[in-house]
Image 1 (spheres, rainbow, N blue to C red):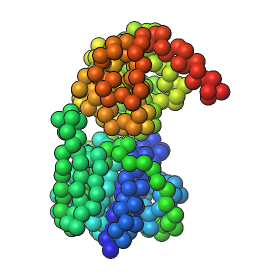
Image 2 (tube, helix red, strand yellow):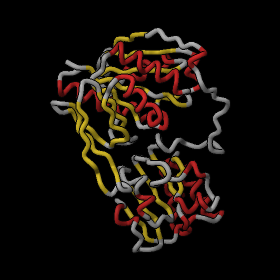
Image 3 (cartoon, one colour):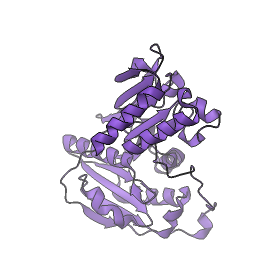
Image 4 (cartoon, rainbow, N blue to C red):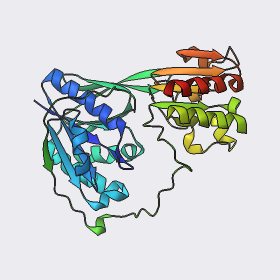
Length: 324
């Protein structure tokens, strides 16, 4: 019997959905292969999130709590993860794919002499380790990847798995942690986010994305109103961010964010391959474009051929009626 451990990432006082997706899958793998599923929370207030994590069925939850984690710096996080691995001795250590894990997995793998597969879209256990699929070539191809060994680290793209609650009554293990000031080689001064109260695209269940067709003020107003009605995140094509119309942090695509929401509404987006690379794993894709030959319709589950300025107003009004 081996341990399948999941790192529970915290951002802005909330558990990242991608972490719970990974934990759900890890618990299913553990149940099917007679392993144990465990989780670890590393945060300045780690104990606050234990009850939520318990819902997803890990047998053990490790907590590492220290004020240093308020700064989200990689040095203390790496030290904490190393200590957790020494304590839990996981066979597989799973992470949601975030900017932080992209920075830290290589160093953690080197510290632990572990194999690592990053940014995969799915993975399964084998007799020797894991097999995983990873989108490459602007998401046109899924590459097959294999990792073998006694310790394997894997990070998984958001939206790859559905949430699945379990019924285990988890034990909680608090791990002592300390770090000397001399070990901290960088100081975080400020985090500057995108302007306004934006929903994190990586965690959003619904995204409304605007393309060149919605570049004027009226188009932007319609996008914002639709997103507000749906409580959706707002994304953008490269054309709008390069033109300075929308914030670069909202760009979705090969050179922007990769997202996997339950619902993706592409408004005025043609469907260039660079954009599709960032949203092709969305569960349901709705495309609105006046060009019937736009490539976006090739991947859309539902398509509306029409002028967005005529389509969106009645669409928004009907949604408002439905939502009461």
